[in-house]
Image 1 (cartoon, one colour):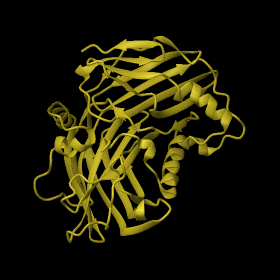
Image 2 (cartoon, helix red, strand yellow; image 1 turned 120 degrees about the horizontal axis):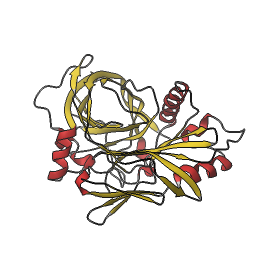
Image 3 (cartoon, helix red, strand yellow; image 1 turned 180 degrees about the vertical axis):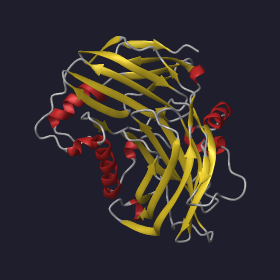
Image 4 (cartoon, one colour; image 1 turned 30 degrees about the horizontal axis):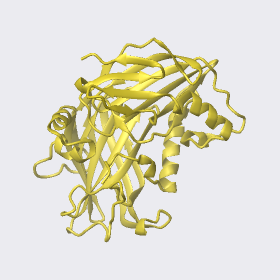
Length: 359
C-alpha cells in the first residue's frame, strides 16, 4: 500500500466540499488589501516544527481513559520510526475533545504544528460498536470513500490557508476510522482556540463519487486550545535567483520537521486577463492565466536534499500568487509526507540557488 500522503491528486472532493473551500478562500481574500490568488496543494511533505500545547475545552466532553501520545496517533500519518516518534511527541500533544451526535462519537485525538502548519487526527466510531458503514474499502492509497458535507476548523486565522483531508482505517480490527486534516497558512498562526464543526457524514457508494449516502446526520462541535512553540529554522534570504528565464529575489525560507515555506518576489508583472474570475482561487483559470502561473509559480524548481543523498521534490506545493505592480510575490508551502529531523537535511534548492542547512 502506498503512503497515506502519496498521490494526493487521486483524492476526490464533493461539489459541496469544493464550494466550502472556495468560500473560505474568497472570505480570506476579501480580508486583505492585496489581490491574492490562492493555489491548491499537491500533497507532499511538510518540514515545519512546533510544539502544540492542547487543552480540551467547552462543547464536547473530554474523552475518558488514557489518551494516546502524539507519536502513536500520528505514526500512520508521518512515520513511526523511533526518531520520528520522538519528534512527533515533541511537537504534538493529545487532545481528547469530542462530541456525540446520532450515535456517532467524533474525537480529536491529537494535534501537532509549527509556525505556519498544523495537523489533526480524529477518530470516528458508533457508540453501539457497529461499523460506520458496510463494505468500506480503501483505494490504492489507503483512503476510504467517506466525506463530510461540511468540515471546518476555525483557528482564528484571517489570511489564506490550503491543505488536504482524508479518511483511513488505523486498525481494521476495531469499528473506528480516522479522519486527518492538514492545513498550511500564509502567515504565522497565533495561539488561541480551535473551533471544530463537522456536519453530516456520508459514504460514496461503491466508490462512486457521484453517489453519496448520508450514514450519520447532524453537526459535531467541540473546541480546544492550542499554542505552537516554533521548532523550525529560518534560512538566509535576500539572494537573487533565476527561474524559467526570469529573475527573482528570495524573501523568506522556513523549515521545520513538519513543513516548509518559501516566499519570493519575481521581477515581472502578472498580466491578468479580463476574463479571470473567482474560479481562479481553485486553480481553474483560462489558458493564458494558467501559462503565467505555471511559469511564475508551479514550475519553480524546488528540492530538499538530504544528507543520505536522497531528494524531495517540493515543486508541487500549494500557496499563493500576489500581483504587486511590476512584480509578483509568490509563496509556496506544504506539510511533508513524513517527519524529517532537520539534522538530516543537507540543503534546499530554489531555482538555481542552493542554500545549505547548517545544523
